[in-house]
Length: 220
Image 1: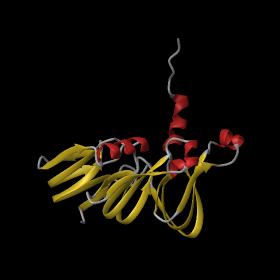
Image 2: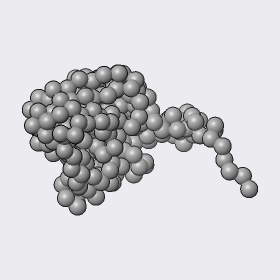
Image 3: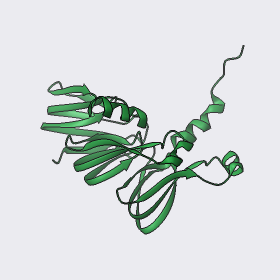
Image 4: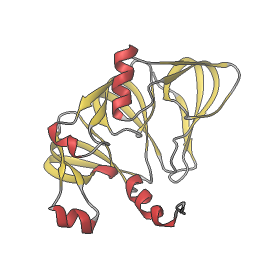
């Protein structure tokens, strides 16, 4: 399946515009910007109750939307950033929030990040996307692609979008307690082997830390 689509307003405020031709697409709930009345929408817990529970653990919505029929459909992520088309042929692991949409034949599952993932919540589980079809990823900021050829890479947990199957990975702490408290870095993904890594140039957690001092607090 190859969608008739275009990505506009990128890389800061990207929007995905599709012309569906008697076809369907699975999307994250809340991503629809507009659609023509001829397009039908169905909300369901993909993968049944067990699949929905695993998605909740990842941090994604329990439900997914299926748009089908013929007509115009526009999608956008919650955060300002880019959208990238990915022709999937195999398996890709992605962080929660990076998944935007995919063709119905792509299987959506959950991958445990390992025991060391218990250091933090966000990277505890990863979304596992498997199959052959069309996939659209979103980011906070721009998307950078890094190819590893029997190499290693350390990526901040908040900047990782995803990586291809075959790469060895673990989520772990970086430095000691002092560097964590003073430097701000705490959790990183250590990736090694050969494959592709996708990162986003901005970090949501860092942005939240930046604006927190400016948020008024209620005093008694």
